[in-house]
Amino acid sequence: MQGAQIERKGERQSDPQSEPVTSFRERAQALARDLPAQRLWIGGRWSEGDGEALAVWNPATGERLTDVAEATAIQVDEAVQAAQATQPLWRNMEGAERERILWRIADLLERDALDLACLESLNNGKTVREALQGDLPPAIDIFRYYAGWTRKIEGETIPVSGPHLCLTLREPAGVVGAIIPWNYPLLMAAWKLAPALAAGNAVVLKPSEYTPLTALRLASILQEAGIPDGLVNIVPGRGATTGHALARHHGVDKLAFTGSVRTARSLLYASADSNLKPLSLELGGKSPNIIFADADLDSACEAAWKAIFANKGEICNAGSRLLVQREIYDDVLARVVARARTMRVGDPLDERTDMGAQISELQLRRIQHYVDAGLKEGARLCCGGERLSDEERRRGNFYAPTVFAEVTSDMAIAQDEIFGPVLAVLPFADEQEAIELANDTLYGLVSAVWTGNTGRALRMARAMRAGSVWINLWNGFDSGAPFGGVKHSGFGRDMGHHALEQYTTTKAVWIHEGR
Ligand code: NAD
Image (cartoon, rainbow, N blue to C red; front, top):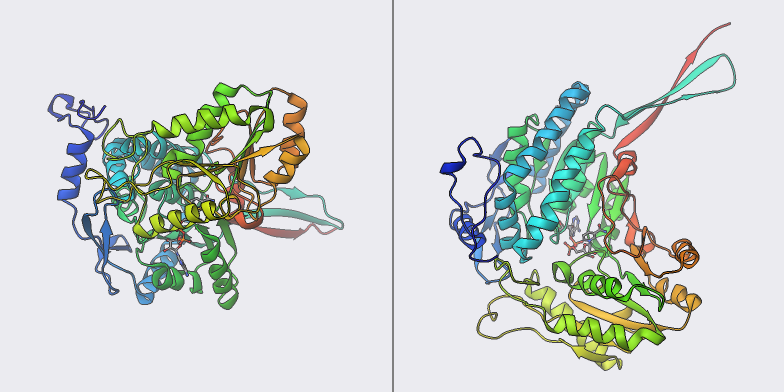
């Protein structure tokens, strides 16, 4: 739909005639032109960062979009203090009022969806279509979902021995530190903010140094919605500086993290070395997508290429290992390779583009490293395997959709999270071998099983060591359903009522009834 006219919804609905219609490209270019240097959001106002200013790049063009200030440890401390000072006001506010504010955030996100999607695309390199259709709707929905919870977080009464009444109170954790990655910047912020706020907490949010733009844009939306000043503070900066200061802060009562295993380890140490704050860790994956010969192959193959190439493979739940039963292996491989070969890789602002730009040069090098390792270890490269650097794409971080066949489970491309558009296709003989291969990695985030046999589907669902199992579908996501991993994919859950458990503590209150 590039070049076509796009209707903007919301904001100025009162006078739709005056609303200019514009293409994604025009809107994004206008946004990029007007981007001011980004600052810190602390205590309900913008402050200059005292740390080193960091450049924010457009991965598809190599252009510098703007600079972002970095919060120092002192400024992280100011943010935590602002959060501590405001949290009692929020927790004591009537649930109905908090519900109204969370709902209003969703409305404002909806109003600004086009701008937010364009910013996300500019800053992350994902296609604007993916941002608009894939990132924004769940980010909006999760605020509505948790708005409904503000008045439903209940305690219980417990029949105890003796002349006592025992009841429980579910109380907010206090100040939540949230550290998020670059692949879904706005959505990850929403996944942390919505349940934390619904449960009555204050938040200090640290976006990725690569992608701070939409999180910072959120600041004014939160304020407009009625979030009290100081309740949510946004402190951009690098992990080793700003993130580290937040993780070690004694005033942070709970840390919610999405990112890599390496960083998760350092956060666990930081917690141990400071105030033993509890953590929830949503980490990486090497997720198996398993196709049995009795499956609906059209649906399974269509899902298989999307599972790895959506968001340029920079998805924690990418279906990066395709396990295919031997008798259909050649057929499935041929279909997936054919689809990969016809994908359009390039300008993320072009509606026809299937895959945008990888986040960074570093990420490109990481992908190439694994592709080289796959070749060296004897896997067969069916397509891709190289950076795309023709005239049109040479300034951006574009990589060709890549498929490897004859992969064995001991290869690096079958074990390590590449976080790029590289698919490893492995054959299996029967159910038992499929289970062994599927569980043969350090990770356990999601898995999918494609089969026409209900009994097998249930057996496989039980056998998978993963946080989610999708039977005859890929990408089962809903604000009401828990998402998270086991093993090196982390612990704790985002979304659903399950996430609320992490943002609340349970207090037992005993009352002596006398005799
Ligand atoms: P990363 O761990 O490098 O960075 C994530 C965040 O942590 C960033 O904000 C970064 O600045 C911060 N950080 C880095 N070092 C830190 C430190 N020492 N102390 C405190 N903060 C620190 O991860 P990334 O490269 O941004 O993201 C990619 C990773 O995230 C992949 O492994 C991917 O699988 C994972 N991920 C998981 C999920 C999920 O829900 N399970 C979702 C998205 C991404």
